[in-house]
Every structure is written in C-alpha cells, then in structure tokens.
Image 1 (cartoon, rainbow, N blue to C red):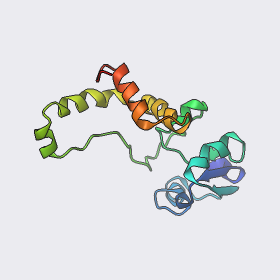
Image 2 (tube, rainbow, N blue to C red):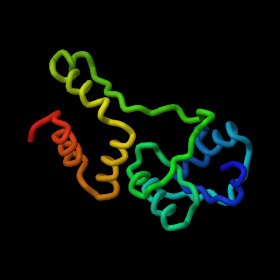
Image 3 (tube, helix red, strand yellow):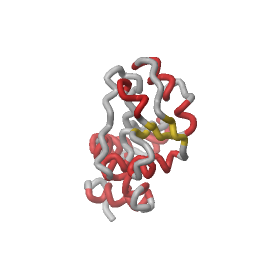
Length: 148
C-alpha cells in the first residue's frame, strides 16, 4: 500500500486519522507516506463507501462481517503494528463458583469462534439487521451448545 499510497483514498472513522495505533502508527511502522485522501466517516459507513467506489481501502476489524460478505481482501500486517484481538471470556471467580457449568460451556464455545465464523455472525447483525440475541441463539443451537 505504501508504494501506491498517493493514489489511494482510505476510508475510516475520524479517530483513526490521529490515533497512535491508526494512520500515524502505520506511517511510523511502514514508512512515511501521503494518501491521496483520508475520508473520515462514521464507522458504520466504511464498507458502503468502499463498495460504492468512494474509497480504495477501508479501516477494518478482522471479524467485520462485511469482509466475507463483500469478498474483500484483508491486507497483511507483516510488521505487527496491530496486536491480535482474540475472543476470550473473562469471568469473575464468584460467578464461576455460582455457576459450575459455565466454565465448561465457555471452553466448548471458544474454539468454535474462528475469525470466519465471527465474520459470518457479525454480518447477520450488521448486514442483515438481525438481533444479536437471535443470531447467537441460532448459532449456539446449531453447534449443539444449547437447546431451543
């Protein structure tokens, strides 16, 4: 991206343009460059702008549902600017003590939540406007982790 940066419009939320782990971080890690344009939009409008041709590159999270839905390509961060963000349940010990089956249920769920699965589930909510609880219940039922 750096070699062609001056030909590219990047679309993303306003804070990405100034955050240390945003555009300034990319420039520091990959070499200083100038974009053709940074298009600042509400986070929910990034993909529409990309798909509609208003931008060439979008700020994304690896589990965004639009990535798979629009058959987009995620650029590799080969210099590891961005840390991995893996799903991990965090539960109070008192909650685990009060719910003896909870740890086993969460441990059974965690390996099923791959990046691809999260993209699909997230798109059900963000792209198809379904209720998160409905999508989660359907997924957990399909995986045999709960019964209807």
